[in-house]
Amino acid sequence: MKTVSLQPILLSTFMNQTRTRVPSYMTDKAGLIGLISFTAIFAMVFVNIYRPFESSGWYDVSDLKYFLFSGVLVLTGIVVLTMSRIIMYYYAKHHDFFAIQYMFWVFVEWVFLSLFYTAYTIYAQVHIKNADIALTDVIMYFKRSLLNTTLTMVIPYALSIMFLALKDMIKKYKILEENLRQAQAKQSPVVEIEEENNPNDNSVVVFTDSKGEFRISIAFDNIVYIESANNYVIIRYINKNQLSSFILRNSLKNIVQQLAGTPITRCHRSYMVNFEHVQVLRRDKGEIWLEMDVDGVENLPVSSSYNKVASESFVKFSGKN
Image (tube, rainbow, N blue to C red; front, side, top):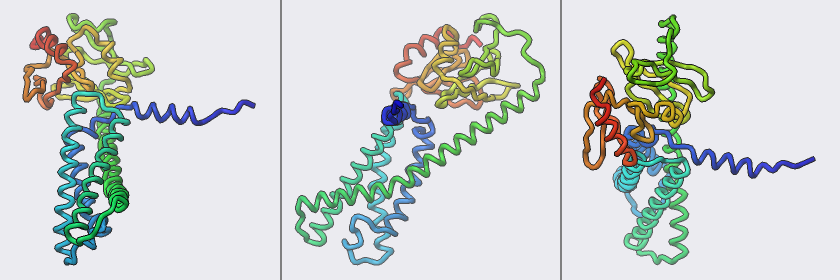
């Protein structure tokens, strides 16, 4: 009997997972602010209960003074973390950001913080306790710092990501409920569907899922933009003068191919926009943003790699709706 090795299968599964794009809620402003805030609170509680980095032996002080002292220590680390996440935010806005990159980024954050706290420990030992420090002591301090930094960070990181994922699932569930409610209210099927997505013929766009099954058809002029969400896309469209959403299990790449040559053009790794609804294309601090003519729609970003396409589409289609 032929023996099947699990190692190549596990390796292949791992590589596929690491090539998965990081969800947008992990790199947007709300997600990053939530992660940093929760990490700061957890770190303060952890440091004052566990007292890592041999900090309890640095000073003979009261609990209140230790709390204030540890606050400065945690605040310094949070400043470093905030700078790192600001860089991540702007990087993810203009580039594809994969899981393997995110894991490496977090690892570098922890190593950098561990080096910082190692230096802090050495300073305390030399200038406060007047101790002699050898290379073996430095290595020991770094190992302890890395362990304590990991303990301090891994729990708030994991809980924050779980919370953001749950929040995103609830958001998608509400959209699905709205889709079901609208589908039940319609009762009448689509009478006529154009075979081609020709915006000049007042056509409708027929959207199918990844299996090719029909899911929804929307009048071309009513589509505002389409947003990528991992293995799904969220179609934002106008229904009864209100902005509605529909979640479709398909990739943005497939939708791009379907709508090639139409005013609905990709402007970002996560967005396609109907340029007939774009009122203003503006540059702000080196970044390009699209202002839409639909109430309730925030300004949408343009990636640097799509600058030319977005500019051409704006000139060609803007204001024709």
